[in-house]
Amino acid sequence: MACTTETLERDPSFAAFLSTPVGQDNKGAHVSLLSMLARLDVDPWAEASDLATLPVGAARKRLETLIATFTDVPAGAPNYDKTLATLLARMPQPVASAPTDSTGTMMPPFGAPIYKIIATVLLFGWIALLAQGY
Image (tube, rainbow, N blue to C red; front, side, top):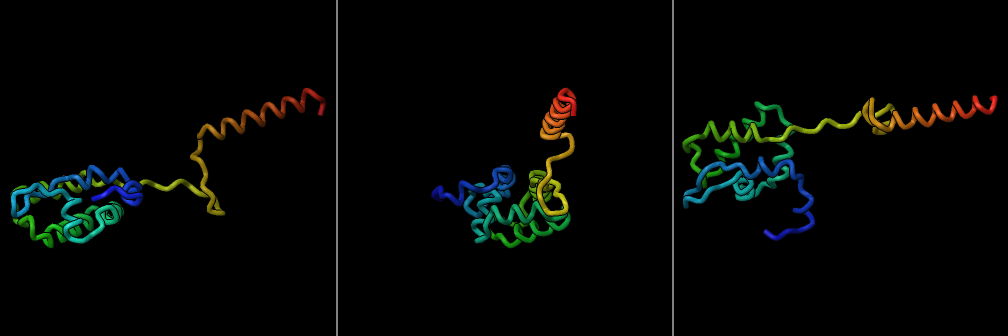
């Protein structure tokens, strides 16, 4: 697969998850989750992103369905439950979004350095006004 702009922009947090082995195919080659999804004509990165947003039970069922659909690796392969447990353990959790105010503007977390800088500037401005007699 050639490196394109699209493949270079993929979320690297899914790399370990997608490189998890799911077994050996009928020819004896080791198959990763990424390879399995690609062979199923499913976008591996989109599927990984979707799986990461699901509750664990739903993600497990989805992975079981995908593995069962993939006939290159026998579904009754040894360590089937271990493979599912490894996949679920390596699946990245979605990142919580930054808080927003009522207008939808993203706000830095309370205690962020920007608030300290603003407070310091306001304090020095107030001291300067007091020194000038205002």
